[in-house]
Length: 465
Image (cartoon, rainbow, N blue to C red):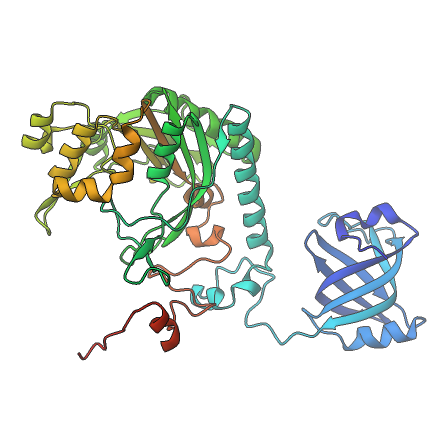
């Protein structure tokens, strides 16, 4: 017999069906036993009558969160007993058989609440249980809808979705890389991608003029409260484009996205304001301003683009220049002497995308003049020989004809956390890590065996040594 989901049960009125799921609750009224069964679509009320003695006796001993199969006849609920809050609220299942798939221990916490009252550490330790609560399920369903909308929007506009490698090359271009040792090539390493930056630029050279990807980005950053060592972004790159075209594309996408999936939200200003970096710092004292008058209004979305960033920023601790965005950003001048001599004065074709005081995306027009790119890397403290070695593939590719191009990457988790009024991006990720990069459920990072280390030609030195 085919399984029927709770939301579809009403279609089978007066027919015998099979349902499967978790026991959400159990109660007795007189001689009748009532069970609310939970599946991926919601709840269905099941009634056990003593006349079905075998099923009735089993029903009396089952407990919450046991996983069961129940067969029974779909019947209308008695008049006045309907429940409009659930999809199956007009019917109930008159049980004829029940089969126990598995029993369950008492849960470590309640799942019939929003869960905010429970310590996050405990929720992350038992994340597979935490995901049973309705709020978490809804967050993941909306996440899926958002990603589907983005895909459909871009494909309809001629973009091609391309997956780029997860095992790539470590290069001195931004945050710290996660390294993966190679067993087959002792002493050599892969790196996990901080972003698909180089690959998407190479796709522009390959003639894929409109690329996008729902991409994973991995960065070995120092502990930060509401950051993840891995996150998901909408990654876009376009050839023969301009900053204005890219910003207009993103603006159109997010206006349509909010209208479709978050119709209860109000966008503060359309078109989205364009604010220069200098103006943002002067007026708002931050490069990710919250331009809402009422900062407590959760139903208002204040999008804005921040433009004309400095190309470089000074790292006082290390006494060196760093890239404000990344080295591949095109400076607003191609005067190489000026770039080297006055890095503090150089602006970039760089833009950030902000929402309610948070950066939710960023991008730039890319440098296609390799002499300019070399000058930028030299300002960052790299030697020409080192640059040409680390980016040999990149320089060679550019020698075969490169179109002007640019792009943007928008964080999906941050946007969702804001629109769903969640306090943390961890609330919109199925299996998140803590701020310091630990997975409390899987207990990672973890040690590996000596045999594994030996195969990788790696030796762990003790802290005392």
